[in-house]
Image (cartoon, rainbow over all chains, first blue to last red; front, side, top):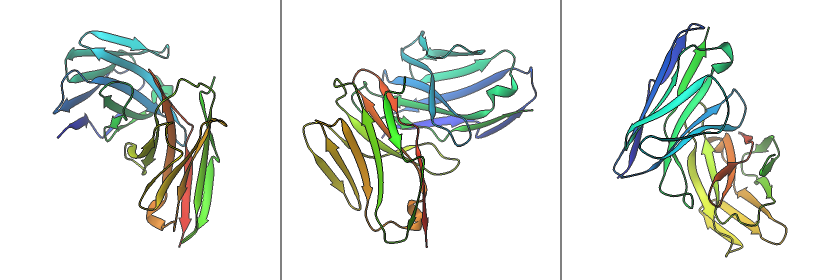
Length: 112
Length: 109
């Protein structure tokens, strides 16, 4: 069966520090991968998606970046965090656009 | 531009009552309409989904009603329970996924 792993679960980082969040998928090949951000009490904002290794599409301009070094690995990074980067970050995967997403358990990021 | 409009933003229902969440869309190319349930501190999980060739889909206490001509679909939760208290997202997709803004449901015992 397919599973998605996302870590860490919680993270507190100072302003200006770097960020690296990792997401891995098991049990499937060539998945579409996504990074979403959810502000407190708000909806889901698509940040990045990838349809293959090294292929990254950005939906929202910001100081975040994403990389896909392996087929089932998706990394969200920042060189210098801002207070506004605080939120709940979710990784998700799908097989094509016509089927549902499977979300990871999320990372609660607090920038202080 | 919000591709999928969801209402209400929040909903309070008595235990045993019916919870109804509505979504509307404009893009007639959408061909898949899922609903997600999210508990606090967790990722959203697929609850139920429908394709536009049917008008209703039922799974246990959860039902999607789909009105293709009105470009609307809704989630009905029958016999709502306190354990149903969560945030619910509708979504629509063709070659890209679009989520509604979410509805916070509270079921009062």
